[in-house]
Length: 317
Image (cartoon, rainbow, N blue to C red):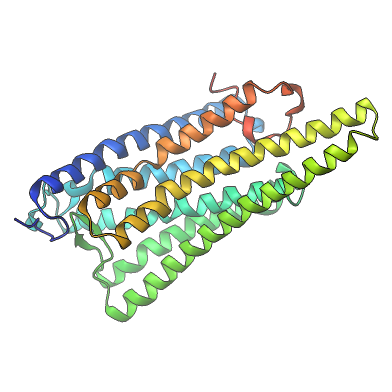
């Protein structure tokens, strides 16, 4: 027997998909909520200690919580019960609400772009966190918020949020509109993916070149100058590790699931893709924790005044 929306082969797969979505999205919500709580704790204790990295992660977490809760955790509960999908108990209004927050999820990808941009500027172009805050940060927060709302509102004018495969998204937009909209949406997503990859490569290249300079510098510098150079190099390496972790989480939670969904007709891979999509908050929290571990085992902790990697150190002990 085919499932009600003809997306999976049988009812067992349909149930497995719904259960996996709820389990993994629950962990994601907890992970993002923990990050948000850490930032709030620092904000409440001393607002002056917050810097761009923490605020970016707070924004990232807010969008992930909304996206994971309304789309993945509530899932079929918000789908009109007429669809016959397992657990469906919603109506047109709840379907529209779910579709709205589905497209709000683009904010997580945009915050990944912001995170990569910040670290690229810090390492490759030698910006300071204060300079990034003054010139770009608040503009980017505003741009992400407005863009996510606009993207989410646009289908409302066409009644475009309809159920598909037990969830609600913009699958039923008019043909001309749907093509344009999806081109813009996926074009933006492709640009973000490419930029994050280029940023990671650029940061790695910058750190590699810095290491080569360090090797030459050690032979002709005094001890004090060498220590200062090593401190700066240590900070760059930590930012490099941070960017690797977060870019990897972006690939795991976005790129790989999209490939699974669009290149395979195997239902099991679709279930895996859904699970990865909804697991973002956990992987972000793991990345943050890993960065903190790198900080604590470092022999040069006194040198990390401006290092991005240690931003959560005092609140995560």
